[in-house]
Amino acid sequence: MQHTKTIVKPGGIVVFAQTMEQKNSIMGFLARFTKPVLTFVLRIDFGKVTYESDFYDLLKVCLPNASFSLALLLVLPLRASVHSFPR
Image (cartoon, rainbow, N blue to C red; front, side, top):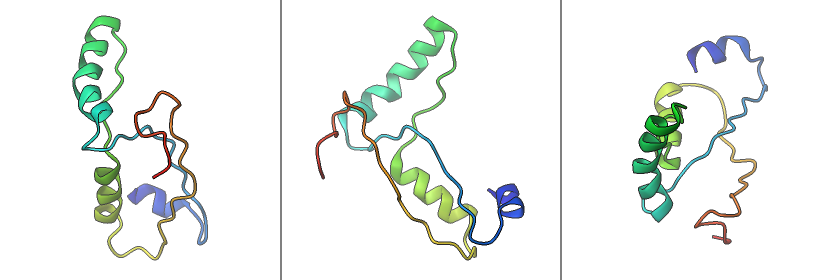
């Protein structure tokens, strides 16, 4: 994020395309255990589970004094997602 701040023009937009889970959801719980197993079996690193609240907390820590507004523009839940119903 520090590097991004140096190259994005004022008023510029940074887009994150990320699969995120809710900490208290069944899918979040299952993903925490499933991803390492898939990595071992398939030899493809799917990374760690990203929780939505942790992601936003990280942005706030990385950019504490930044003059930006954090806007959630669009959330597209997966069809198979447990929380694909309206909140």
